[in-house]
Image (cartoon, rainbow, N blue to C red; front, top):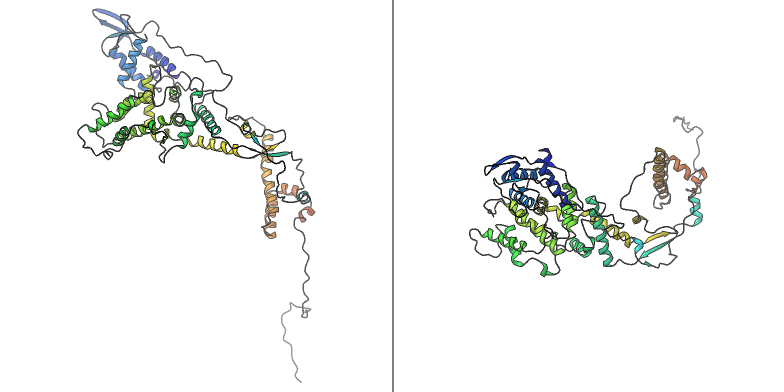
Length: 533
């Protein structure tokens, strides 16, 4: 059974096609075949329909690409697609129009089961992700060449205090850009969101899984900021929202038994009728909530580890139209509450609430425009994962929001441009940086030079602090001298340069003592004899 696990198909273009081919390979390689008798005739290397369902069902449940939630009915549906696509045939060689039966009917493999070709996309010169706007992309506002600055000290005192040569300061000027327009802000959100998504998926390009031209940056911004206190999207156009009666039905089930705000009498089976009302509305949608053009990107997420998949879903759900994101949020909240509510009567006589939710709504959430053979299995896996992580998958990723806000703040900030230098040096570098191995001598030099600048600045702050008393300043300088003798020696190479910091104050003459000075002041007191006349 070890072969049943198969290999994990990671994210990337045509993942559904690769999964189809992998499943066929495992099924052909592992399905037991033997001689069977039917109608007084033997058929070598054959299997019954029931044997095929049993084996394939267990294979899919153990395979990490699908998981234990796969049902026997879904397995039967997949085998019918196998028969239609000539992956298998009946023992008389018929396929295509025959309906696969979960019974003793005999089937066999053709000499070669057809695999679907995986297209090879030619490499593109340009990235599919729009470039993140840089600081230099926006129009410059003229600023006076000379900006009045209050001098801290004159040149003479500067030279006196700085005994170290600091070299020439290059010519520079202050540059400020015009205010970012809403269009610029939207474009930055879109570019950085797609870049972040590409990084999370671990892909070199989003070609084949996402068409960036079909995405609206306004949708991303609305999904981030146009929300209520619970994080649910608030729509500007109420006509795009769910009908009032559907919202009432969802609220009734989500808060059962306290959610019946219409105060109508409840009868046996009332909750099933309410659930049917919600299900029929979503099943009549012309497009799944995750939309057709985002199908490949959501299928790719299923190839990630759980911790990474949560963040990838957070980013992908920001790409949805706000109306779709709101409906998905409300539906996922309903599904999670129904699965966790023991007070809610059974909505189905044969299957549990969790399985019912998935079977009812999975195709309303994920589906392709053209019927894909593994649609139902992939939708089941995705919806199961979203139910288990419903508290986090529809949140705005905090690290993405922080990155965008920091970049916008950077673009709005005035900068100093040195002659011959690129203004936007911080954003000109690619998002990924790489390390170069250096020798221990280079490392020690970089460590010392990098840290000494801050220590020198600390010494200057002590010297220039006018609020510090001379006594405290001398005390701190002594401590600094003990901790950093080399830097202190370079700053004060001579005793004269050190003394120049604290100019000598004129000495005051002490007043003359107005009493006689004893020749032997420390002798003990001796009694003197007095002679009276």
